[in-house]
Amino acid sequence: MPYLIDGNNLMYALSEAQGGVGRLGLCKLLMGLPARGQRVRVVFDGPEPPSGLARQIEDTGLEVHYSGPRIADDLITEHIAADSAPRRLTVVSSDREIRKAASRRRCRIIKSEEFVPMLLRIVESHRRCESKTRRGGEPKEKREGLSQEQTQKWLREFGFDE
Image 1 (tube, helix red, strand yellow):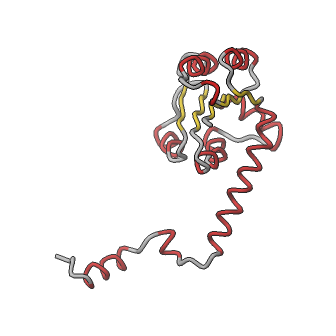
Image 2 (cartoon, one colour):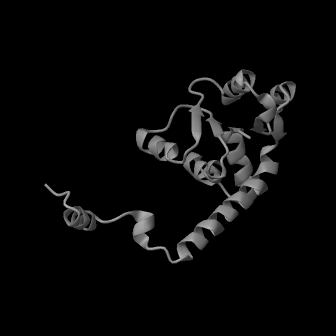
């Protein structure tokens, strides 16, 4: 089930629940959803951040949009209207107009303040799974890859050096 998230609205709800997070912090928290096979689209108010931060946000695996000079609510309602399977779409926002647009298309609607505890449980579950994997005795090379020196050694061993 894909998610369409009102980014600024969810950041505010998170700040009420546990303290503030920025765009990157929110996207890192949301990374657990795509890991569970969920498509996640987050819409933020304003322009795209500087390229370094934008790249870090892109690396989270989320589909992130910025409203530019428009307000994000308009962009979110356009995404709702354009969705080809709105009954499968979960819209996360506490904004009345966005929820009304989602309701008209029969989307699943979750208020941001109700989504926060769900998100925090997903994040905690994801962290526990990663922790178990790390403790599982796998060699660090399996997680991080071989060093350049080790790679060259194996290439020579199998006759691939030039």
